[in-house]
Image (cartoon, rainbow, N blue to C red; front, side, top):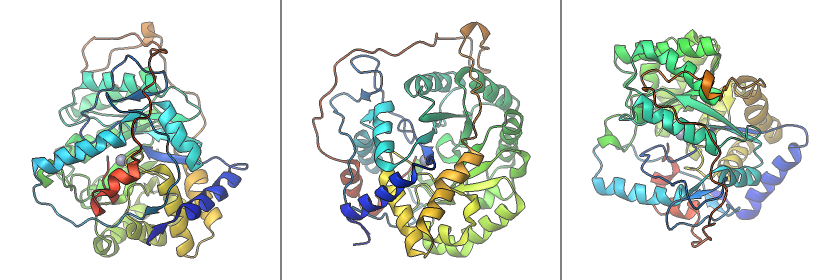
Length: 413
Ligand SMILES: [Zn+2]
């Protein structure tokens, strides 16, 4: 089987847990809620502070099982049916059936990960005010700074001149530690010169606020009628001055999301390595890559520029961890040394740099978010009492995603 048996996965995790005596491990690419369609609402009542479940769904803690490595999906830029999306939303109800600190801490403890960067993403239709509401929800739900750092993002509706003030407000209100930009989900076509300028405004804001930027990169997507897949392609990004941000820019999925191994080898990696040479602040994460693409990236990109990311919960975090370790082993690297570099040393000097949060949650001192109107909601604690929804189902995420075969490997938020 091109994958790992339970005891093989457990053996890699044991290595990791032993290494944690001397270093901390980080995951730089985790989504705090279902960002792709953002259709789920968990409600505020009837849950514990650290756990929220969708109606009718119970929480089952993750456990190590055998799994197949994700394979490269077929490139299909054609329109997909509504039925296809409906099936995906149904599957994602299982993957994101539960959210909250308990869910992610369980995954992190299983996977040997000490701290994660949470990446919220606004949909194209998301207004400045509604994304501010979402940020408040995320910052309240994942308030434990020992385990979670939160990134912000900029709704596509904001004009260039509003980007920096909005970013600044997110720093002050929610203490964001990084910025996320997902051109595909947010509907930002970096093929257009106006959006290239918009991204450069964001890079300048990141420089002023000393925020790292996690930028989605890839060429295909089966959603949005196949239209937006290339909004964040390397071909577009090569025309953007990524050095404008003195802070790290992390190209998610190594810029190869949903690319075939052939595309990656012949087109994307040569271009990516030119960009890495040109921009000293540019890095990549290896989240959401199928096994063969992952090996190609680990083989040809300088490990000093690679950060570990899982794309949890779309991908099981322990699967991403153990698959990466296995790929390093198959490529003949010293697994421990290489994994420490990409999941500990590099994230620690680029993203998880120690420092005080800039959050200032004193409402009297908080300015309204530009473009978001004046609606300020007091930041308070979440309900602490309620009914714990008992685990009603035994289906794991791996089982869910396995249902759709190769599509599952590269499905992403
Ligand atoms: Zn993602």
